[in-house]
Length: 134
Image 1 (spheres, helix red, strand yellow):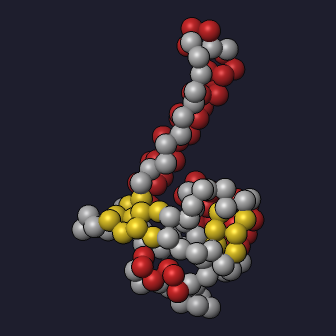
Image 2 (cartoon, rainbow, N blue to C red; image 1 turned 90 degrees about the vertical axis):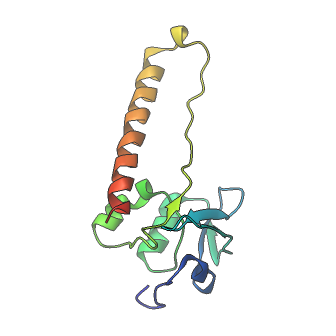
């Protein structure tokens, strides 16, 4: 951002170096403006990786901009290494599922894992809401 400037609105991202997380089947995503208008974006990646840590290193290094989960980069944001663009826009939540068979036969370690992840993602949602309100 220091080198290439900051996009003023989501539709401007096509003019910037886009970093693609190639694990997703497409690079499309939708943002909703504070006024409730949906904006569908389909940026084309200048660089692509299937490794989240590489993508984070690229972001910190100023290689470009990307659409990534807040939980991946919260430490870098708090350290001032990464900036959130369009903080007042909302994105669709990405569901997380734990699929298992009969609950009464669920091993304790699996239940503990599910409980941990449930608590973790509730905390992530709380942090996300804090950043949206800034």
